[in-house]
Image (cartoon, rainbow, N blue to C red; front, side):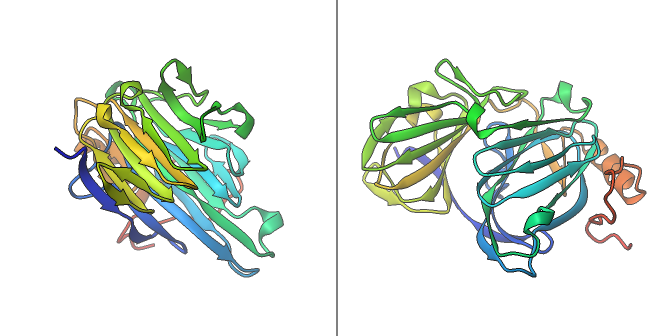
Length: 292
């Protein structure tokens, strides 16, 4: 029996003035453990007149994780956070009962050429924490656990595996691991993982049971214990997953909840502009179909 249950290719999606590769959710797989949404941004080169500008928009019931490979994004939110994220650092924002944030090219880069490349991830909250107070944490690149096994460099971006824990303050049992190889290397990680697992190939290739898999696709494992594979040379892979929740999670636009009624309430609150404001920001992203 194949270890691979499902292969998900990147699909183009527009998030305003920016095109991304959408990985999750997928019609045949709405989530992997608590991970409910993954966008691959770029790589894209922006000229002196082009900037990354995502206007103020809301979230409930989830935590967002932003991780950049290249470039820089200025994060501002209704909690009062104003932080520039750079490659290797982690922005972790827990929306809880409701938060609004914007994501923009920093002022000092707006009139120069720049690159942007990274991952935008949503992690659903346990039902008992869906309405917590919003919070924001910025974790520096130097504070993320790293180690090497042979020719493979590991980085535990979030969660925990085999006695190692990231300082990112997650709210459920999960993991997000970066693996970079310099040469071909066989890995057997199944015994270290738990719950559901997905493997995202950013660069290079994986060989599983004689089949070769290339970049920009997610491989969904039948079982985390079957996460055994061979990394090709110069390959970068992200393994993510964890324990799934007992209740289904519903998504409406930027809102995630175990309750459809709560999603309706959030939609109406945003249309009526009852969410908190971001200090110094103007404008907002309207709910799809909303007449401004």
